[in-house]
Image (tube, rainbow, N blue to C red):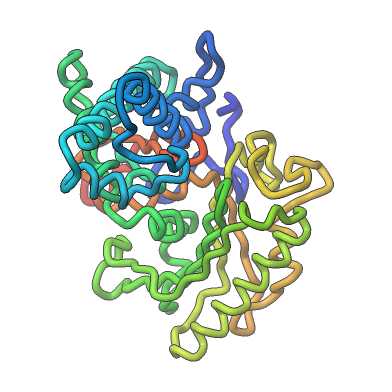
Length: 353
């Protein structure tokens, strides 16, 4: 993250519940970005390497399907119910990937803005399921074995929902008083998800019981749309969700929170890091996604729409705020198309003063 403070409406480092010490940190090694060593693609490459070793001597226990096309459910079935060779192969890939994730995490812990981190939550699509949980558990053990006190733990919410729920932390809680729900958007390198988040503030004023009650998913990677087509599709998703909230008689706040890859400038433009987004230059100075959304949906419930955008890993991490109050400094790593990252420091509440 650039050294200058980001206190604009978008990409702010100063939020109601936390201060963002670092995000979208791009660590480099001899072979490029270190985060590339701990992505879904990296796991597929490690798995393929193990399969290639088997093929030199005997049949591949996973068959002929390319590694990047083998789903997590299939791997989990092999791990739990497959023959010893197949289970051992998957275990080998888990171990190697955990070693890579541990090495990358150690580098983060030495970086400015990440020092003295007490806990790291792991999210992203890879986290969901037993394979991801085993990687997290093994990585945690490797870090402990090398003398690091930091604790790695799976993110609390389902990763598909965490990147939407976290939007509630982008604005001051009092601005949502009297409303029952907001809309959150999670833009990724393969998918765009949007959902209606029921706030449940009466039960938990800290958003601990916020939950996604309506969702829309579009896998843009299957269609290769242009940027403007992607924006139009997103707007249609949002309009549908607004309609659903109305039918459910949820009082929707005129607020849309957006998580998007990259470094987000205070005016809502993307400084860098948007290279995996659907066709077109998302980093152009003539393009501003929050402004495009607000222009297409000028009002929600008769009130002017407010759109706030931040980095997608930041927003996913923010979903964890209510459950991280027993530590001061914590971070998030999201394993997906790349390795998203953010580090937070909790603000002291009035009862702590």
